[in-house]
Length: 381
View (cartoon, rainbow, N blue to C red):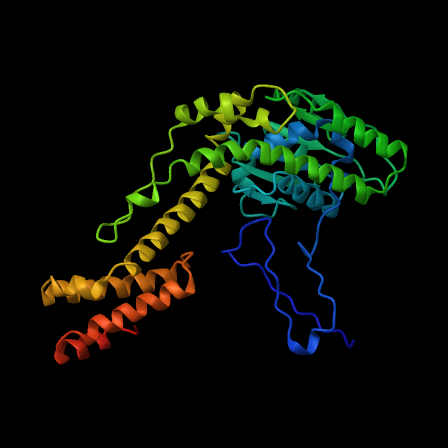
């Protein structure tokens, strides 16, 4: 008791990986503020420990949104491992479904266990041995034993063929026929193995593994970010008297051509079939979700730039050259722009909004009184 905590819960508008600073009150300005990136952060190395030799392959499977099952001894181990898998592609958001603890009582049980259709893009965490049989048709299955305490390391499991997963007492392992696109990074494996030999704390091992995944994901996503940025129209093409220009279309083959000079080889030491990995990723739910988010952000940026272009115009001079009908239409459009900026949280500077409000007020005052009263009733300016 006696401790006051001021927290801010992330909203749907926050970008993954970013931290919003909570403003302190005057009464608490003498206290130290601590920013926690998340309330609960899984012990990444402890979760990946039984399979860390294959961590890069698992990163690929999660990145591509492949159907994946984690069979664990307990709900806590199942949940933590699933959350660790979802977290390994951060700051890229995992857009498919994931169930840290899936049971036979879940409503999708029949859908996920049927063999009449391909398994959906979802990561399941299960503990019931019954699933070893009912989910045997899933393409990628991780079977883990008890997670060891910090400082201990279990025997490393091997990649095994799915046909070997038949009995309820199957040994721990990664059961898949998947062939990774990228060559395994032996350096990170040696670094983690050395840490185990030196009894490096699990927290420190997790920091190393998390940084490795972060750099791998960033090396992969930067070429995509660079290409998508090139789809943005030039600012000089934005006219205040025309609708905002559209983004250019994403052309996969055009993007592939950019990889030769500005691909992940600029930031990553890992060799392999990066082109094949990108082609597969472009068909995945994670790309679809990521691109929709980026397209929305860029479209909103265009709307914001269009608003700024309108604010820079001499609107009072414009209305002198146009009819009252055209002027009223302009006022209504400007009001709609303000509503859109507020509703969609457009990245517009506060002074731009105030400037536009001033423009609207000035235009209304330049109109006859009967029109002024009507326009003032259509909403706040």
